[in-house]
Length: 174
Image (cartoon, rainbow, N blue to C red; front, top):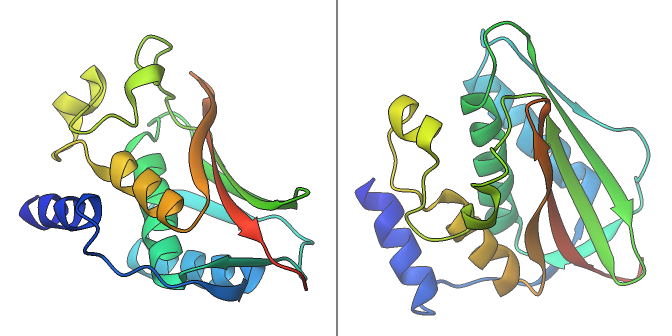
Protein backbone atom coordinates (compact mmCIF):
# COMPACT_ATOMS: atom_id res chain seq x y z
CA UNK A 1 0.00 0.00 0.00
CA UNK A 2 2.85 2.36 0.78
CA UNK A 3 4.38 1.63 -2.63
CA UNK A 4 1.06 2.44 -4.32
CA UNK A 5 0.89 5.76 -2.51
CA UNK A 6 4.48 6.63 -3.40
CA UNK A 7 3.94 5.74 -7.09
CA UNK A 8 0.76 7.80 -7.21
CA UNK A 9 2.45 10.77 -5.54
CA UNK A 10 5.42 10.61 -7.92
CA UNK A 11 3.21 10.50 -11.00
CA UNK A 12 0.85 13.25 -9.85
CA UNK A 13 3.84 15.51 -9.10
CA UNK A 14 5.29 14.91 -12.57
CA UNK A 15 8.41 13.09 -11.43
CA UNK A 16 7.68 9.77 -13.17
CA UNK A 17 9.31 9.32 -16.55
CA UNK A 18 6.96 8.21 -19.29
CA UNK A 19 8.55 7.20 -22.58
CA UNK A 20 6.95 7.46 -25.98
CA UNK A 21 7.95 4.76 -28.43
CA UNK A 22 6.10 3.05 -31.27
CA UNK A 23 4.77 -0.27 -29.92
CA UNK A 24 3.25 -3.31 -31.59
CA UNK A 25 0.14 -3.40 -29.45
CA UNK A 26 -0.88 -7.03 -29.94
CA UNK A 27 2.62 -8.37 -29.22
CA UNK A 28 2.84 -6.23 -26.08
CA UNK A 29 -0.61 -7.20 -24.77
CA UNK A 30 -0.02 -10.91 -25.43
CA UNK A 31 3.25 -10.75 -23.48
CA UNK A 32 1.60 -8.93 -20.57
CA UNK A 33 -1.22 -11.51 -20.47
CA UNK A 34 1.30 -14.38 -20.66
CA UNK A 35 3.36 -13.02 -17.74
CA UNK A 36 0.26 -12.26 -15.67
CA UNK A 37 -1.02 -15.78 -16.35
CA UNK A 38 2.20 -17.31 -15.01
CA UNK A 39 1.67 -15.56 -11.68
CA UNK A 40 -1.97 -16.65 -11.56
CA UNK A 41 -1.61 -20.26 -12.64
CA UNK A 42 -4.12 -22.40 -10.82
CA UNK A 43 -6.63 -19.54 -10.57
CA UNK A 44 -10.02 -20.22 -12.20
CA UNK A 45 -9.52 -17.54 -14.87
CA UNK A 46 -9.27 -17.50 -18.64
CA UNK A 47 -7.79 -14.51 -20.47
CA UNK A 48 -8.19 -14.33 -24.23
CA UNK A 49 -6.70 -11.74 -26.56
CA UNK A 50 -9.01 -11.51 -29.55
CA UNK A 51 -7.53 -12.53 -32.90
CA UNK A 52 -6.54 -9.95 -35.50
CA UNK A 53 -5.03 -6.49 -35.07
CA UNK A 54 -1.48 -7.73 -35.73
CA UNK A 55 -0.39 -4.49 -37.37
CA UNK A 56 -1.66 -1.97 -34.81
CA UNK A 57 1.05 0.44 -33.71
CA UNK A 58 0.54 2.85 -30.82
CA UNK A 59 2.80 5.38 -29.18
CA UNK A 60 3.45 4.82 -25.54
CA UNK A 61 5.57 3.39 -22.75
CA UNK A 62 5.51 -0.41 -22.61
CA UNK A 63 6.18 -0.51 -18.86
CA UNK A 64 3.39 1.96 -18.11
CA UNK A 65 0.96 0.12 -20.39
CA UNK A 66 1.87 -3.08 -18.55
CA UNK A 67 1.05 -1.41 -15.22
CA UNK A 68 -2.36 -0.36 -16.52
CA UNK A 69 -3.27 -3.75 -18.03
CA UNK A 70 -2.08 -5.66 -14.96
CA UNK A 71 -4.20 -3.40 -12.75
CA UNK A 72 -7.26 -4.09 -14.93
CA UNK A 73 -6.58 -7.85 -14.89
CA UNK A 74 -6.12 -7.83 -11.11
CA UNK A 75 -9.34 -5.85 -10.66
CA UNK A 76 -11.18 -8.36 -12.82
CA UNK A 77 -9.80 -11.22 -10.72
CA UNK A 78 -10.97 -9.46 -7.55
CA UNK A 79 -14.45 -9.09 -9.09
CA UNK A 80 -14.76 -12.79 -9.88
CA UNK A 81 -18.08 -14.40 -8.98
CA UNK A 82 -17.65 -17.78 -7.23
CA UNK A 83 -20.49 -19.41 -9.21
CA UNK A 84 -18.92 -18.79 -12.64
CA UNK A 85 -15.43 -19.17 -14.03
CA UNK A 86 -13.84 -15.79 -14.65
CA UNK A 87 -13.41 -14.95 -18.32
CA UNK A 88 -11.51 -11.90 -19.48
CA UNK A 89 -11.44 -10.85 -23.13
CA UNK A 90 -9.12 -8.24 -24.57
CA UNK A 91 -10.04 -6.71 -27.93
CA UNK A 92 -7.75 -4.42 -29.89
CA UNK A 93 -9.30 -2.04 -32.37
CA UNK A 94 -8.10 0.84 -34.48
CA UNK A 95 -9.92 4.14 -34.40
CA UNK A 96 -9.04 7.13 -36.57
CA UNK A 97 -6.48 8.55 -34.10
CA UNK A 98 -6.43 5.92 -31.35
CA UNK A 99 -5.85 2.26 -30.64
CA UNK A 100 -8.44 0.95 -28.20
CA UNK A 101 -7.53 -1.86 -25.81
CA UNK A 102 -10.86 -3.11 -24.47
CA UNK A 103 -10.66 -5.28 -21.33
CA UNK A 104 -13.96 -7.01 -20.60
CA UNK A 105 -14.68 -9.41 -17.74
CA UNK A 106 -17.66 -11.40 -16.53
CA UNK A 107 -17.16 -10.50 -12.88
CA UNK A 108 -19.57 -8.98 -10.40
CA UNK A 109 -19.51 -5.53 -12.01
CA UNK A 110 -19.57 -2.10 -10.44
CA UNK A 111 -22.90 -0.86 -9.04
CA UNK A 112 -24.34 2.01 -11.10
CA UNK A 113 -24.20 4.44 -8.19
CA UNK A 114 -20.44 3.79 -7.75
CA UNK A 115 -19.44 4.04 -11.41
CA UNK A 116 -18.97 7.85 -11.49
CA UNK A 117 -16.40 7.62 -8.67
CA UNK A 118 -14.21 4.70 -9.78
CA UNK A 119 -11.39 6.96 -11.00
CA UNK A 120 -11.38 9.20 -7.93
CA UNK A 121 -8.35 8.88 -5.69
CA UNK A 122 -8.87 6.72 -2.61
CA UNK A 123 -12.35 5.67 -3.74
CA UNK A 124 -13.24 2.05 -2.98
CA UNK A 125 -16.64 0.55 -3.61
CA UNK A 126 -18.57 -0.89 -0.69
CA UNK A 127 -18.14 -4.52 -1.75
CA UNK A 128 -14.42 -4.05 -2.38
CA UNK A 129 -13.84 -2.45 1.03
CA UNK A 130 -14.95 -5.64 2.74
CA UNK A 131 -13.23 -8.05 0.36
CA UNK A 132 -9.90 -6.60 -0.77
CA UNK A 133 -7.16 -4.57 0.90
CA UNK A 134 -5.94 -1.48 -0.87
CA UNK A 135 -5.95 2.30 -1.02
CA UNK A 136 -8.26 2.93 -3.94
CA UNK A 137 -5.51 4.29 -6.17
CA UNK A 138 -5.26 1.61 -8.87
CA UNK A 139 -7.69 3.08 -11.39
CA UNK A 140 -6.68 6.65 -10.53
CA UNK A 141 -3.02 5.81 -11.13
CA UNK A 142 -3.84 3.87 -14.30
CA UNK A 143 -5.79 6.79 -15.74
CA UNK A 144 -2.94 9.18 -14.92
CA UNK A 145 -0.50 6.84 -16.67
CA UNK A 146 -2.76 6.63 -19.73
CA UNK A 147 -3.10 10.41 -19.92
CA UNK A 148 0.65 10.91 -19.46
CA UNK A 149 1.03 8.95 -22.71
CA UNK A 150 -1.52 11.09 -24.55
CA UNK A 151 -4.28 8.52 -24.11
CA UNK A 152 -7.05 7.83 -21.64
CA UNK A 153 -8.67 5.10 -19.57
CA UNK A 154 -12.45 4.94 -19.41
CA UNK A 155 -15.12 2.72 -17.90
CA UNK A 156 -17.13 1.72 -20.97
CA UNK A 157 -19.82 -0.12 -19.04
CA UNK A 158 -20.56 -2.30 -16.07
CA UNK A 159 -23.40 -4.46 -14.80
CA UNK A 160 -23.78 -7.60 -12.73
CA UNK A 161 -22.60 -9.46 -15.85
CA UNK A 162 -19.17 -7.78 -15.76
CA UNK A 163 -17.22 -4.65 -16.56
CA UNK A 164 -15.50 -3.20 -19.61
CA UNK A 165 -12.64 -0.72 -19.47
CA UNK A 166 -11.01 0.83 -22.53
CA UNK A 167 -7.41 2.00 -22.63
CA UNK A 168 -7.00 4.49 -25.47
CA UNK A 169 -3.52 5.07 -26.87
CA UNK A 170 -2.39 7.35 -29.67
CA UNK A 171 -2.26 5.49 -32.96
CA UNK A 172 1.03 5.64 -34.83
CA UNK A 173 1.40 5.21 -38.60
CA UNK A 174 2.50 1.72 -39.39
